[in-house]
Image (tube, rainbow, N blue to C red; front, side, top):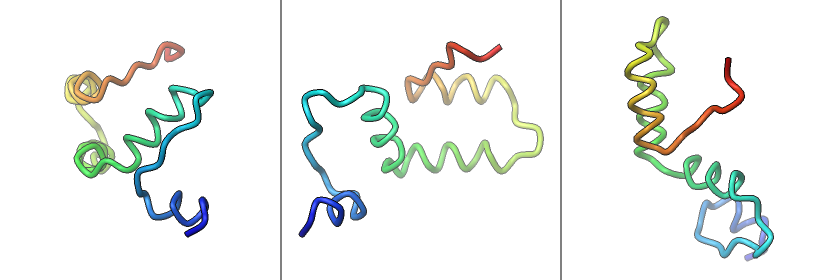
Length: 68
């Protein structure tokens, strides 16, 4: 199996020592079924509850330092 096949399959792979932690975190969340359920539940709403968003962000360790 080529490295590209492993990437697409979502299988575990060792990150390079110089990997950006933000990219690693994104890839973890992208492949996490529980996170995807939480995200989909909030994203489907036309007017999401900000408190619910904050709880989900805290649950998953998300921070948005550049957000106004």
